Length: 263
Ligand code: SIN
Ligand code: MN
Picture 1 (cartoon, rainbow, N blue to C red):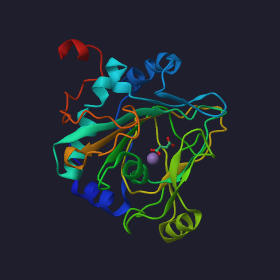
Picture 2: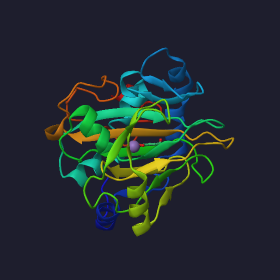
Picture 3: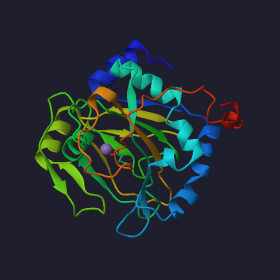
Picture 4: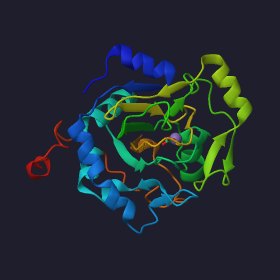
C-alpha cells in the first residue's frame, strides 16, 4: 500500500496520520479473538493496572500466530518503509494497549523517543508507531490525544514518572504540553474499529482514563530502522526486541481465514 503525496505531507507537518477503516471487521475479529487467552497467560509481558486489569500485553507476535502475521501486514509495513525511505526495518515492540471499560487508566503526556532513547539506547527519533483500533474509539473510551506539530522543535524535557500508573514512563513536563498545545491544539484520534494510526517517535501524545462502559483496545507495532537499533539491553526483550531481522511484508489478505495455510 502506498500513501499519497498529500498524506506524506500531512504526516511530516502534523507528525501523525489517521486512516479510517483501513482494516475490515473480519480482520479486526481475527485480532481480537486471541486476546482473552493472551490476557490470561501468566507472563511478565502482561502488565496490569494498579486495579488489576490488564493494561498492556506485549511480545504478541511471539505468542500468537495471528499477531505473527499482522506485524508483517503490508498495510502497516509498506507505509512505514515509504515514510522512512528505508526497507530495513525491525520489529521493536508489539502490543495491545487494553484500556478496559470502567478502569483503564491514563497514559500521561509523553513521546516514545524519550523512553526509546533513555531506556533502550536508540540514537535517533525515527521509529514509527503503527496502530489498529480494535474497538470503536470515541470521546468516551480513552482515545489517544495528539499534539499536531509537536515533533517539529526537537525533543522537549521529560521526567521519569513511576507513580501515576503501574507503568514507568518518561513524561513531558506540563508547561511544555501547555506551550505545544497552545500553538496547534489537540487532536483526538477517534474512529471505527479497523482505523489505523501512524505517528512518529517525537510526537507528544497521551490518553485519558476510560470510565465508560466500552473497552478501548488498540494494537501497536513499532518499527525502527535496523541502522537505528537500540544499543542498550536495560529493558526485557518484550519491551524492545533484539531480533534485527528486517521485516518482509506478507500478502494483503494475510489475516483472513486460510492465510496461515497459504504461507
Ligand atoms: C494508549 O494506548 O492510549 C497510549 C498509546 C501510546 O502511548 O502509544
Ligand atoms: Mn506512546
